Image 1 (cartoon, rainbow, N blue to C red):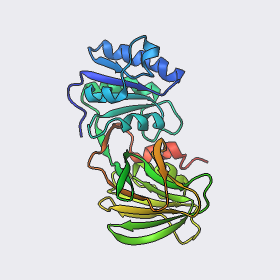
Image 2 (spheres, helix red, strand yellow; image 1 turned 45 degrees about the horizontal axis):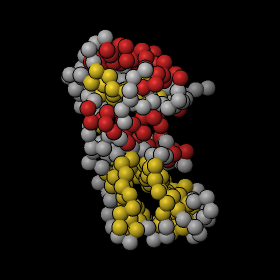
Image 3 (cartoon, one colour; image 1 turned 90 degrees about the horizontal axis):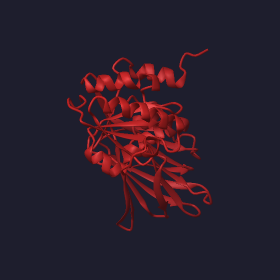
Image 4 (tube, rainbow, N blue to C red; image 1 turned 120 degrees about the vertical axis):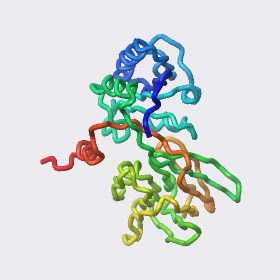
Length: 289
């Protein structure tokens, strides 16, 4: 997908309480205004620029492009406000690894120049539609870019998770929990739990158990068309559903979590020169002595 040919309005979103992001925002706003682009500021950008900010949910309804200054956590928080609207996101990495925010601070003006010239492309990243139910009643519904995690609470012991794919029993996971990750999220929590790396273009997602009691229960890759049902049975106390590490709710014994591919992907502006393998080599230090 190409970036829109005419970008008239840009939403500028920042990592909270970050001086580096605030100082970078001043330069970005000045650069855009000089090119007759309207700049909308989120509440974290506004204090650095002495203007009134707007809620991110309002910005995404008006912007042709979102520029996010921060790390992957900031980008995930902004993307959560998108809902179904396909607004492209340009992430400038001011964090640590930066798998989602690929552009470095030194590259931000060159990247913006290319975007306004229509020379940058976007990639559609799969999202998950996550729904939690109790006794047939919906507790909450979420969109996830990285993952949905069902885990035991601090006070519970082992958790049992009866898992089905397309209504067919897969297994009952016994352990600390289960991660359902997209290809994008395969380099996040799932990777640290022993899951495989999936390239973003794959039409699949991965189930990765967390500290499984049975060592034969290994990560499982499923087609993105699969519908996943997870029945939650903590052995003591409650359980927790966490989406993208930022939002979620408490689960009780017998609750169900339903996960499927969302019809609304998120669109990221990507580097025109770096391949996915170059990004992985850089971020994960592959080949370093």
